[in-house]
Length: 296
Image (cartoon, rainbow, N blue to C red; front, side, top):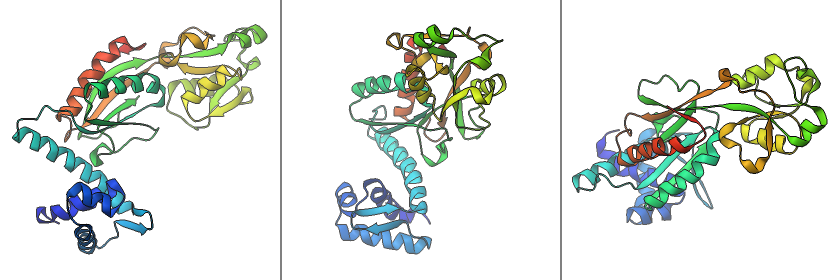
């Protein structure tokens, strides 16, 4: 493949993004027959199917998903290049995909809403997942990662903040069962995780300190822990950043510094200097000063 085939690659990228030939044709300003011709030619050159055709449109295959990721990065870079050439290199437009740990959603969503108000031509996405998104394939523009941020030499990693976590219960639970301490943990009910051998320090603490039979409810996300605690199902870990006054929760053990988690801002070197990424990073570093965390 070479730059000579860029039109075909761009066409396939738009089909993957829009999901239909007609949608891609509208975006590109070409006839739908041209779109089909480009797709057929590109699949022939690659020797692989990029899409599954069906009545509702085109669904990317695994190869098509890879093309969508690479095409997204290329589209970002060409947009920034065109902006610089036309003197509009500082405009914040297009798609901005952010991935983060779930526990920050309550803070991130309002912040991203404010950011979009400032930049109405921007389309924003927030994806929360435990897996590490592949920045090199354009799966995200900015990642907020906990613990170890990964070791890819092509990623730019910056310290963001330290998030602390505490053990909480409802007042009703405390009234009924009292407060736990180091000597009576086995007489209390706890909320635990479905994830085995988790790297999270607080989940390791729970495994080491609390008998398995005392964990009466398990979930795979910290957000669900908070719902379970509020439902009076037992004692559970909740990020202090997610505790609200209206929750009326009691922190049942003193804060444990060793359970704090460092958070990092991760970007890929190819997109790190783009206007939207730089502007969003500056915005986040300002907002974190007012969050219930310890800024870097």
